[in-house]
Length: 204
Image (cartoon, rainbow, N blue to C red; front, top):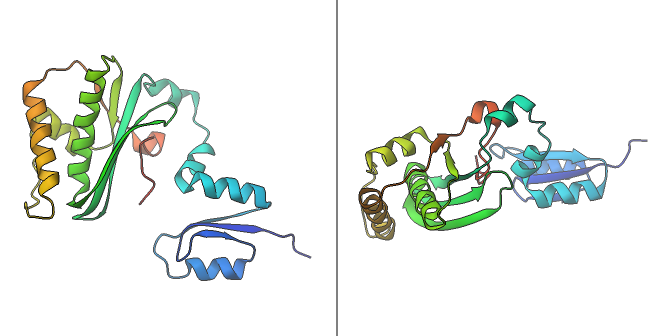
């Protein structure tokens, strides 16, 4: 007789924990990029479901001593997420080592991921300056890092009534970059070698 298994569906038609494969299969069938996994006990399933897919995945990764030596843990990490392009966009910053959230802004209507990455980086720079911190800042976006260095958000998104607040924020960010100097080291997160950036929203 087969042993009882419990199935976690993090991303599917109806996320949850199920005690049969047939039910789980209905929740993920034809669902784009469904995220699910089986567990031997209900306790393990509950813990994994509450952690969320990407946090669970990260917790199971064994980072090599080489990788650990490459990451600057005296840092914060920033990231953005956008549901559509354009779509609802939000961004946040966390402590790299602990993933403790420092700020979370949004969502904004009709934003893009690149805009979010840019705003997250500028927000992080301003945050560290306010705290008089010597920590570095990680971003996984080459575009955002380039825009920050140029002190200009070079989005091609058209301004309209729905995203007016977002463009006001972009103007504030550009103004901050032009009026302030900073010694913060901006670092590129090596997603290929290190996995997702700690500030990742877990929505792919």
